Amino acid sequence: MQATTRPILRITTNPALLRSLSTTPRIMGAGDLGAPKSGLMAEKDSFARREAAHEAMYIREKEMEKLERLKAKVKEQRKHMDELDKHIEEYTKSQGGEQN
Image 1: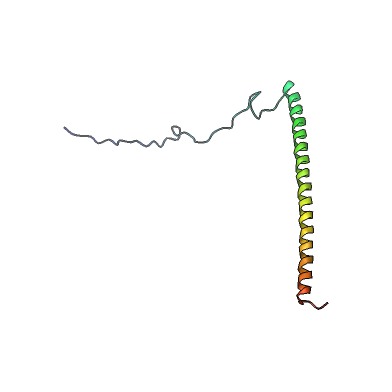
Image 2 (image 1 turned 60 degrees about the vertical axis):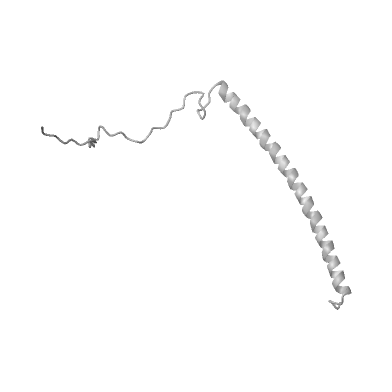
């Protein structure tokens, strides 16, 4: 009884048997996300654009209001800082720190 040895795993070198790991891009069908719209869908797209424009304008207005409130706060803080600087100057003059 003669035992023949066979490899357990066979490695194929035939390129026809090897599969490629690359993929092809998906082709969009009508109605898929990202597919170009036509007919009635194109009209809805103009509505969506108009709605997006209104949204952007609303957000811009709210941001401008916030900016105006921040500018008013900065102006108020600057006024307070100027008053504090004036008090510091008066205090140092009364202490004899400056001879003016």
